[in-house]
Image 1: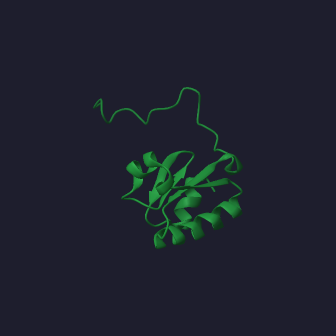
Image 2: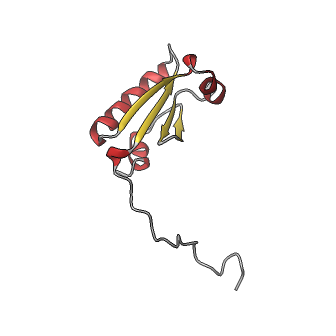
Length: 101
């Protein structure tokens, strides 16, 4: 057997992780003033967050230099629990899947 292909996927010795309760998750929308894509993203994110019951926070890159440096070319950006999920356009179904619902 090939060492690359002979083994199955790596298993977590503690077993599979339980899905996170969506109510315990945080969606962060990173925006900038006057951004029409941000307005479109906000509508989708607010809808999903309201239905799922997770927490929403919105951050403005014009008020945070670190966020500006990190994301200025990708606005709007959506993070789930601090990890980048998507940017520019938000797909409702993909966001729901990202939240485990």
